[in-house]
Image (tube, rainbow, N blue to C red; front, side):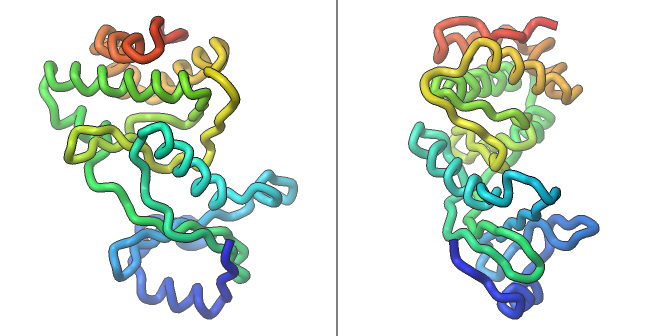
Length: 210
């Protein structure tokens, strides 16, 4: 992790476009070369950010996902900023559109195909022991070559061996919190979702029944 001074950060911000921000300042910047700079702040005094910075988790998780064949943004560097107190990751983005947007733009047969591909992606995560609690169709990208990639995965956790049945059920339930995702994946195109998942996992997705 490279240290970045307050002056260097100010120069960076002044020459970048702010894509996301909150009351504490910028969260995602687009730099002049088209790359991205994502900032993470410590939200509580006693937080895992103190010993396991989100920026480092982002970089490590990107490497983990790429190792199992899932496209992710290419991490260029990880930083610790002195003022404001932040960690940050500098990366090249992935081309494509979110799977949620792709579903909106597609007809029913195309949505069936996309739901099946998402099922395959989810099966690959679970079979590799990966629990992505905040997984939803907005942080999955449909790439120009038809592959599905992942973004915004700092809270992803990987264990040893395959994901337990309990965590598979929990992951499925979490995804159903998003109403439109639930309607598409677990109601209208549930057969396609299950087909894709079973092709990878060898059994149905647990916790998918409403």
